[in-house]
Length: 226
Image (cartoon, rainbow, N blue to C red):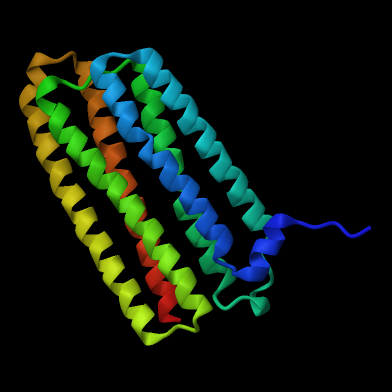
């Protein structure tokens, strides 16, 4: 009896189809961080808990896709790009969803309320980091098309432009992180020390989202250069 593996069939169409499915799930996970943050600002912990459940489910779905990709990845001779490069890429993508899970878990577990002076800067900062993830997803979508069209020069130029835009967004997130950390430093004497420690942890965690999204772009540059 012949059995079919839908995931293996995806590789038959394109080795990047499973990677794209994974980053779509990762992006969905990251997007949930924005409404989650809004619920924490309102102190609606039931609403935050529901969104946290969605984040956990999406992170788990991404883990399943990662495992399936690793188990079904063909031999290098059947791939247009390096097997190790593909494995590196899925690992970097997966860390984005993991970080979203970690951020939401800390904030919900401690029922963290960001101080009012930091609320709007943090909102903008999170949007920028999630935009980095969206840009990484779009770049991978374009790369899939590039591979299927035979590395056409025009498509390659589009990829490089998109990766440059990703770098710009990541630099913007870095600048926002620095500004927020300075604001928090000015507020430290007014806040419980343990709250300050965890606030810095959340700020750094949001920064890691944009950093890891940029790393996805860097891996894509390596793939297009070979």
